[in-house]
Image (cartoon, rainbow, N blue to C red; front, side, top):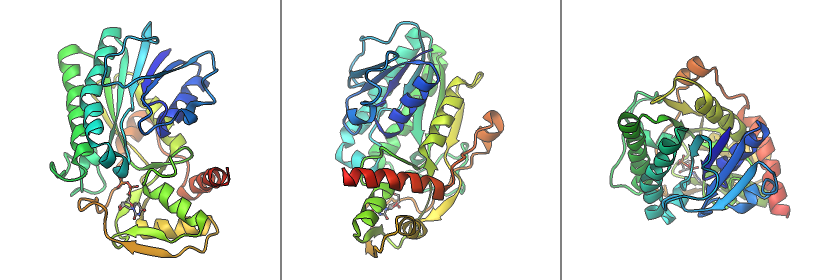
Length: 316
Ligand code: UDP
């Protein structure tokens, strides 16, 4: 199938490109490399079924890759809290204008469409674990709202394109994901802790470290994205994708120190964002029941692979 993917040079996007090429698809990757990097797809650029186009998807796209288009994955967006604070306007534009432009492409081509939304649409959740039915608890004017609210708008746009134009679209809400190619300096907890541990620096705990997160390894996430995209009868369906194993940030810090053989200490700091969600864990009953998907890589196993990758990056 011919597949168009926005944000294909990003962390998750580049792994998705790998999997799609491996699966025999022809892939056109659009990315303006604002937070993604051509390094992530450098190994693919000479592949006969892969094409990279540097493009900002908030602008109209009329370039190559639109013929016989079967599927459009829309991943483009800064995704780390530090990244979307730095690029707050760009984040709102790509999730609003960019989403509508990608929906137009899918509609014109009669292609399937999948958007990667986020667990952030649940905000600081009052329902735990989070099911797809939960409407969320989002501060509309807080420091995270440029991301949370623009992703919520993106979901609304997808639903309107389904109602008005009949596009075969689905929504995935991604929970915290980690693995190789997550930029060393993107500010998220996994790259921060691993690079700090490997350098022997103190791990920066924001707040008291009692907040929880659930971490999915990137290969599991990519398998889930394909299951949702290529599953039939899923128009308008919303799926959580993530690993339900829930850890406090303190537990996570200690695990990173142990697995990287580090003697780093802990450095408690003020929370970066007042609206930092206190807990987060996906309920994945729906995707498991409907599509048989579940994560396969336990945190320890995924972290060992991830730490090895960061070790190589720091050595190189
Ligand atoms: N965090 C931390 N130290 C860091 C980076 C993050 O304690 O160096 C915490 C952060 O406050 C949050 C959690 O780890 O509670 C996950 O943060 P991340 O930026 O990875 O993404 P989020 O899940 O908040 O979108």
